[in-house]
Amino acid sequence: MIIVSENSFEKAKESAINKLLSSSGNKSDDSLLFEQKAVLEIKKPSEIRIAKHSLFYRKEKEYYCKLFSKERINKAVKFMQENIGTRRAVFTFWKESLDLKHDGESSCLVYVYFRVVDGKLDFAAHMRANDALRLLLLDFYFCHDLHSKVARRLGIRLGKHYHFVDSLHLREKNLKVGS
Image (cartoon, rainbow, N blue to C red; front, top):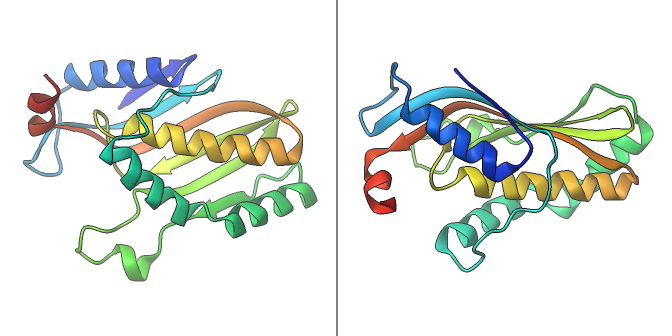
């Protein structure tokens, strides 16, 4: 298992990739070069610089806009306003009837969790899978955007961001493209 605790998203991604590259262990399929469970803590989440013109950005934005609709954000904010100290602010994205199909279109984001700790809004995202090289920073970006929107609407400061991943992985073909 990879455990990373950094002050920024960029450093967390770099640390996670370095740990993946030096890891060994079981892989769930042969297309993966490296694979590990991962827990990433970002202690001081702040803005992330993203190439917004990239194909990956456009595809991920479309994906996250579906997941984080205005209606869902409004429900999260209303629930948190009515239950500010709750440990039940869990919002799921997994849809068994859709996600168990083998058509390649299943949600990588399983759920998000909000909790107010010491007057700040902490955030946790649980991913079933995350491509460390191509998509980890983008997933941080969109999750941070949700975290920021909810904190702003609640009128409280951002707390820590936790990112749990069941399959943080690198594919050999992506390493060759990136070099």
